Length: 331
Image (tube, rainbow, N blue to C red; front, side, top):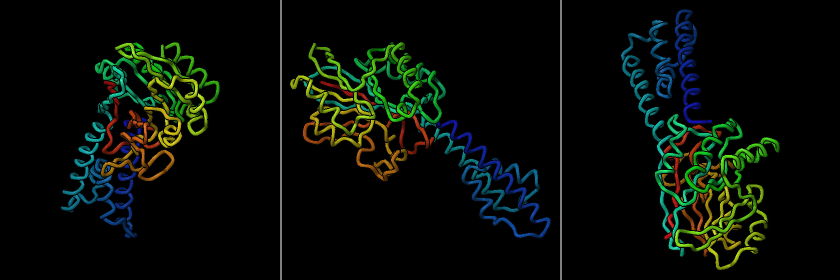
């Protein structure tokens, strides 16, 4: 679910509930019944129901003469407006994070993950335009381009086509794509190919950088992240080639490192959805404060870069966690 959808649904529901509570409490007062506590009525204004509270106060002529309601309920409404503005910015403003590596290569890779059909600031061209401004040599998408809960295949294809028109764009499946029916997944992949996106399904391609040096770009299906598929692919690649792996989920890092991949680009965790003291809070698997929620981690010769992603799914809000475009500068 996109941020604006979840926000509208929440605000409508909480204001209707608050309005009804003020009406109910007025009716209880008339009939000398047990009342809703005043602190509860005020609290509702501070969790998004300020508009419903003000309308309820005026329509039902309830609490309009009490100073604490005249002061606190409008404050709750203003607070809701301020939080909504800040949250809208925080959930839509694209942040670019750049990593620089001395890998014997000379190229720029833009990495996107977990788009989930999201439209930034209600502008379907905002994400492709931001990527275009970065002037990448290659674009990679590490899964969950669509959202299996609120699937909008047309939106995903529009974004994919716009990205593929910028430069060569490579894609691997995420867990949301694998939740589709077989027919829908085949249709989605066919439409991606028609849009110009190159799908890497347990395979690799040999690419060249700006100086003509070759490297291997590997794509691992989400269904095979934890098995020996990667080791089998690595056994077929020239050991002198630098290797970059596209794999949707970071929690299989030990398997990636055991396979001696140089760089891994991943996503999936949405940076733990809520970033608290520099740590992601919760993963899609309900792991609290995961180790690989976002950023960079290196073990032996393998470096993992986990994107915070672009969109949302089950939880439609990010807190202290702006959508992220990752740039890999190979110098």
